[in-house]
Image (cartoon, rainbow, N blue to C red; front, side, top):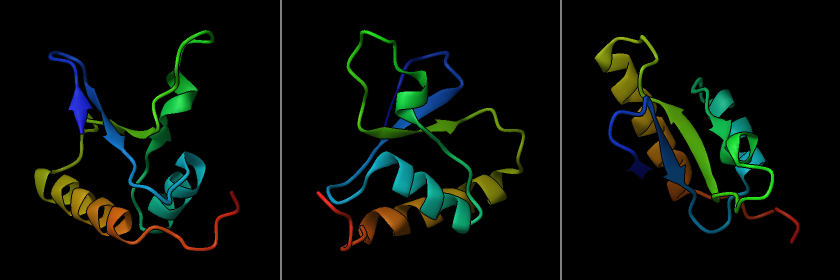
Length: 84
């Protein structure tokens, strides 16, 4: 995970086997909302292979922690059926 001091979001770098859109869809199915990093990448910039996490999401800390656990579980189990 990477972030800039003072910014209310962090990039969660995806493990091999994930595509950003597939990860965002799987996270939503696990009741965790993330955005793909390409949605915020500059038009001429290099898009990070990551999901964007809001750190100022207004959720209780226990709920936020539980969401991070679900994301870690997803990262540990990338899909095996994605086309290359």
